[in-house]
Image (cartoon, rainbow, N blue to C red; front, side):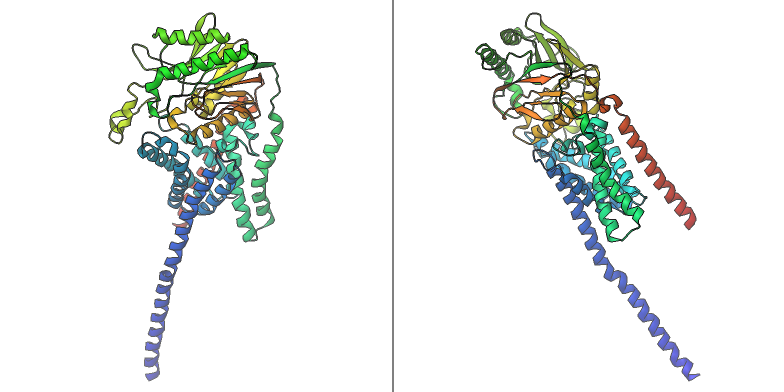
Length: 538
């Protein structure tokens, strides 16, 4: 009896000790979990900065796969909420420095708002990547989900903002030929697959996996590299339809910033005078006589159809150079929206054909929700009258060469460039106006887009810019001539004319649609797995 009495307190003490130890274990593990979470957050933000560093003007394209490998390490196996939060940090680390040029002249509010909005869309993407990361062969599904996120950002909200696509950082990269095979979606997919695959190779190497798993991880890295090498024959700058001599005029602006619009007549005179000088250079034999000339967007913000002095200044310059000139102008009809228009100006007939810009930049050329946005920034009133979009691609017949017009912001959109080439363009011109953004990296980011488009559609791309950098880009993506910023200059170059369509041009959005189906299938499969797991648990 006594011995049984003595045992009970001992048993109670042991149970109490075990309970205290069990309670202490989670408490001890809590700081470790917090440290791990903080480390993941820092790595996610750092992966965004690393991705930013892979973009122009730095030729560090190879950093992009490593940036996504770091991000994959943060996302793998995480829940949806963690995937969203980590993706938001990645997006801010990437987009805040990438888009800082949007604050030029208007302060930080538009920049911060745009970066946050786009980072939230990236966060939705990484939420999806985290969900599919538990599937077999997850780098494939994760890369497809990434393309779904880029497709969303290119279309919404307000018509989309594709800036920061992985493809646009690869103008100097090994993967660039993928653009000719399947457009920017396939190029971005190759980078994402390689990056996620790099992480999976490291992860499986640490855990001593089965051979099949290791081979699959290695294949996700090798496949995009092999595909890019196999696609290299698609990249050519051969003159299929002969050659033409093109001239690109950069007239420069009196000063940078949003107030350049107040200097409209000076900007027009600068471009007219630089064209007159080009005519003198041709007459003196210093440069070859061009077959046609392209001016930048906004080179004549004065409507020549309603302002006789602007008409005379342009006509005098075009007659002097003696060849067709594409003029960037703003047309102001009595009613309705403004038009951002390229005008084909013949030295004999005067203005003939026109092209109205189709992709109108929200909060730049038009102000959605004007009264609401005004609460945050009065700069919306700088745009007193919205621009309206055109409907059809513009291809000018310039001395027998078919020159497609893709105005500035439109170069970021796959369909705008592709439809112009499909309409018969042998050369693509991207007249732009970067004077608003001063000496920021924006002009180099856009030039890289133009280089990717040259390879994607195998066309020479001419880039006339009001204040620089203007350039001539061969169909293989090589920049053969370029100007300095904020200098008046003219580039004259013999360029190849091409009519062959690349697979990317012929297939159009089909590669992107196929990747969207893959992403939807992976996310749907994940959802079904979770539903079945809950039913089994119930």
